[in-house]
Length: 131
Image (cartoon, rainbow, N blue to C red; front, side, top):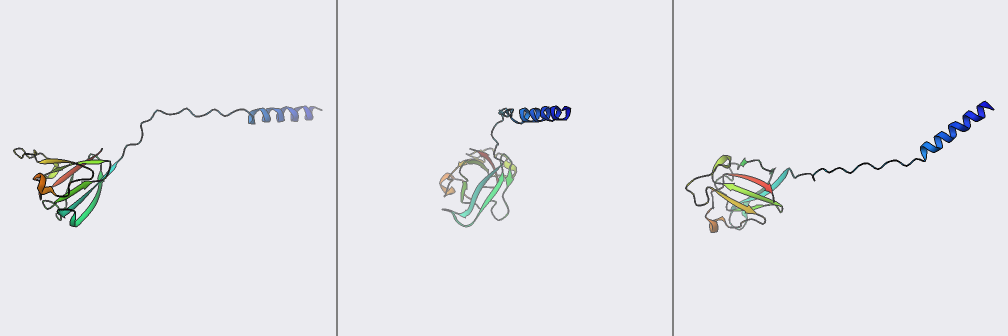
């Protein structure tokens, strides 16, 4: 009888434990994940003429253009959701005395003809941000 009582007690304990509701996890108030990469499209000829390339780069990190494109870009366009500052000097440094202070702010869809904004063949470095 003692065995039966102990077995019954164990079964009741197990059943009550299994049927207890599991508490819901508390929602967190974390900020949404920030983008870490942006993209920008460069072409050496106006109206997106070849040679062209699309570069993915870290947000808020200055990158110099490769020798293939540095000082030769005539069209530039950041990806949707990205805005970029393009500089006429390496290292994303301003160029004082230049009407644009040595840089140009560009948003999607970009500028197909940089001659129209007096920035043709001037791009040397770029830094992009989430728009």
